[in-house]
Image (cartoon, rainbow, N blue to C red; front, side, top):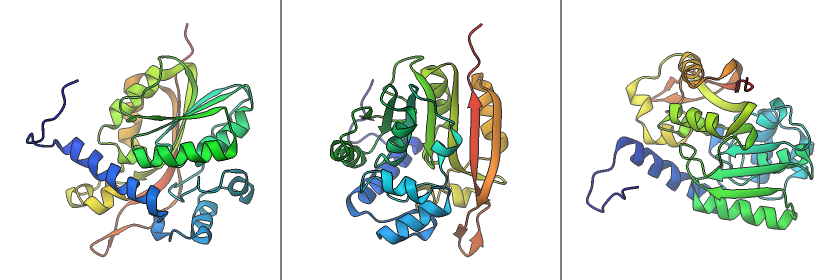
Amino acid sequence: MTERTADAPETDASARRRLVRERYGDLARTDEGCCNGTEGSDDGTDAQSLSVGYERDDLERAPAGANLGLGCGNPVAISALEPGETVLDLGSGGGFDCFLAADEVGPDGRVIGVDMTPEMLERARANAAESGTDTVEFRLGEIEHLPVADASVDVIISNCVLNLSPSKPQVFAEAWRVLRPGGRLSISDLIATEPLPERVRTDPDLVGGCIGGAATADDLEHWLEGCGFESVRIVEDREWEATHDGAAVPVVSARIEARKPTAR
């Protein structure tokens, strides 16, 4: 892979990745919330998580410091995990959903978290060491280029991360590659109810805040089916408050589900 030299211009995609990496590195260090204007206090983080579908028991059984209140849904709750399955979390952050998934798949299962932010990875690994969980591991990598073997995963989950990617079709292509035949996607994310204007899509605060990169359901369905996924289901979950220059931004949280066909 060719490295970018110091004086080479950044592409739009690399600039967006740098913005996201810096923002979430700061969040990992400071515990400040990002979603829905939630403050970074324990009470604020818990309230935000409860508001998007988690239960009080979920908050209590994950290691302290794993939940940063950065999600827009509860992908573990919709994934119908089975004991012994291998789960991959795209953009695993502090590891909150990974630890919940580990409880579901049990001692014979395995959970892999991938995150491109070194500070988040450090935090997640510290949480794993604190919890004593030996079925969860965290890997540094981009969700467009997963450090995961072909056909090695049963379920992919993700929580308000897909919208941060500048190349969503590539994310789905990678998901297809690493899923076993019959494997499935269970994603919670923000989607746009209509195409977002350029001024919203390029605003750094909205891009880093999980808003500017939201795609429409039609686009997501097109990309998923283009990779070969079937049983694609995108369901609006709850309204999401977001504004730009005093005007509402048309985004909602949604559940995105699909399945890789069973090999014939």
